[in-house]
Length: 208
Ligand SMILES: Cc1ccc(Cc2cc(O)c(O)c(C(=O)NC/C=C/[C@H]3O[C@@H](n4cnc5c(N)ncnc54)[C@H](O)[C@@H]3O)c2)cc1
Ligand SMILES: [Mg+2]
Image (tube, rainbow, N blue to C red; front, side, top):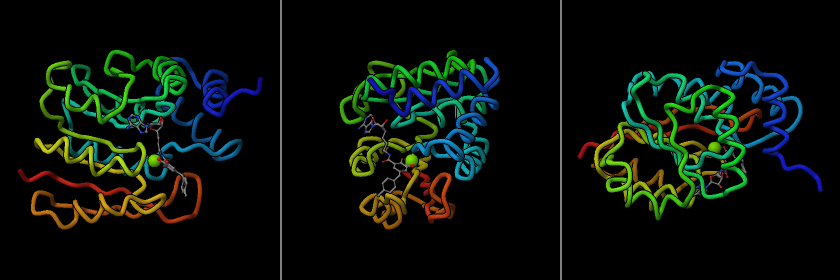
């Protein structure tokens, strides 16, 4: 049977990237998505904004919602110090299989804990399962209608960075973080990965 897009993306990484070199993995995925087959990674343009927020927050613990193929997982992990932890949640087992291999090819397994399951089920269990009661940084890039309910599950002090707040968009989430006194929110205008369509990231600092 025909391969899947994530399988073709992984093949491009294994063919064009150097094992253990995370930047070459990021570059191989961006080239594959720009010139061969589009895929819903945060991409190179928004990826630079992600990098700058990660570097500014300098988190000891990061939670990513929606691993997909592990592109943003690798981007974030590469910027973390060796003792930092990135927990990434993915409920599609086929995507998780690919993401684990992309993360391994980039040599980032030590810092990354990919947990299979849905954010709605796993977030409440974070404390008892991983001993992490709050994360320094949360990257939201999963189904857009889950951003708001999951943000409400996590109101325990952290910086939220959400992808796609314009396209596909997450209007209820955006309205909430921009109007709630609990957050100071900031929009980073950019483009939908590998296109000229407007999109952006929303950074929301939880004020307690
Ligand atoms: C109209 C339109 C369509 C598509 C686009 C283009 C476009 C551009 C983008 O950057 C996008 O992020 C998206 C997008 O839809 N992303 C959804 C991403 C899901 C991944 O996360 C996984 N997942 C989804 N819910 C959960 C959950 N609760 N717990 C755990 N994992 C979850 C899934 O298993 C996938 O691995 C789309 C633009 C405009
Ligand atoms: Mg996205």
